[in-house]
Amino acid sequence: MDRPSLAQLYGNRTMLVLAALGFSGGIPNLFATNITPAWATMQHWGLELIGFLGFFQLPYALKFLWAPIVDRVRLPFLARLGQRRSWILLTQVLALAFIVAAAIVAPRADEAANNAHNYLFMALLSGVVFLSATQDIVADAYRVEVLSRAQVGAGAGVFVSGYRIGYIVIGAGVLIAADSIGWSAAVLCLCALALLGIVGTVVAREPPQHARPASTVRSALFDPFTLFAKEWGVRLLALVAFVLVFRLPDQLANAMTPPLLLKGLGYTPADLGWIRQGFGFTLTIAGALTGGWIVARLSLIRCLLAFGALQALSNGGFWLLAFAFDATTVSPPEVGAPVWALIPVIAVENFAGGLVTAGFVAFLMSVCNIRHVAMQYAMLTSLMAASGAIASSASGVLAKQLDYPQFFALTMAAGIPGLILIAWMRPRNPSCAPAESQ
Image (cartoon, rainbow, N blue to C red; front, side, top):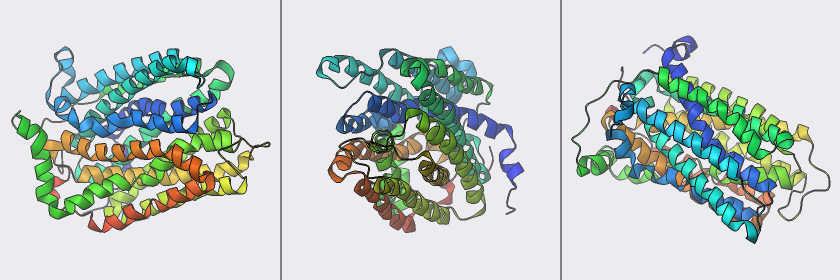
């Protein structure tokens, strides 16, 4: 088979649509996983409570429970858009409304008198995550249905790139603007950019409707799993374990990176906005597009091995910063770490993150059956989200017990089990890959 050129992979309408859908999907996730921990850090929440925010990501782990509803129930008031686009538009609009409400409520200082107020903020945060998880279900199914087999790697890279563009525009904008106009005002102003994703949904084309099983409880809930069991056999346990642990280095590090940089090393929110959200996520996009191109030309399994190793090693930069500048969880430094030291660390970590995300998403897409794609993909990503929620929630306790240098060394070691499990990651039946043409 001829290897596609960059122009053939990326120069078409489908890729532009996927970039727009990724953009809209990244905004609620960004608010829940990046903006909220940074905001809570500046409100002097404790490490344990910041880590506890990871439990509010559980809808990502449980979304397989309502995936059959999203896959089968039609929305009559949006019927003209089709099954996939109608659900995407609904979740986009509702998630944006919840983000606006959460920005108005805003977290307050971690004091007993403000607990009721913060509980309301957390409830709104839960709503954002639930709608974000629901949007992921249908966007993931749309992506698998609309891509040919040759486009899987590139499509994953473009979707991740759109996701990260949302991270850059919204994330960097909020962190930079928060210093001058306040957190709530920054979130409210920049939420308007989420309308770009809604426009992308309206102009997208609905993918072909593949024949689906009869609408019974058995076919909706059990057939996707039994098909996995038939195709993988006893290696299904290895697949489950792989999905649970492959992203563990990132999952452990993500929640504790803002406290390390803001409190442990003395960087400002503006520093994080320009360097981590802006410069860093630009490199994530470059890594995702590069990863999609590499996956299209090389073995997916070999890509997973190389990308997974880079993912774990990239956390070494945070370990080096914490060790070199004596970052502790007890008290902030008298003199902050220099900005120049952060730039290469963020560059390596984000480029590696783009590579591994593109490869991992392509792998998940490749093992889903087209007739059960919504449920199967939701099952796999739910497993990943479950491990992420647990890892994020435990990260605060671990960081406080170990201190920052030892904690980030642990995140590097956490990548070893996933690399070992790659040896078993070959589906028996190639029919579980997306169809050759749509």
